[in-house]
Length: 101
Image (tube, rainbow, N blue to C red):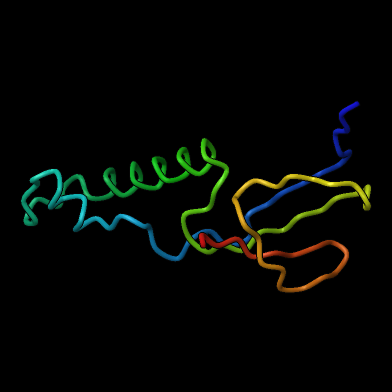
């Protein structure tokens, strides 16, 4: 019998401070001239969307972030997304930091 935890809530308090792929790295890879800045905001938003989609698909976090987890039923094994977790504070609710090893 499988158990699904009730009232499991996960909220990202602070997302990554910098994207794993920078704008300059992407422009160099895509052979886009550095002087062309008209599409920089679009490219940055696409980089964020790509990282987020990859994190959801792999259930890993590609950089450190602060995550708020609330679980009503304690004592059960629960698999959280974002990969390996490092517990910073044990409170009710639990606040954890996710980082790639």
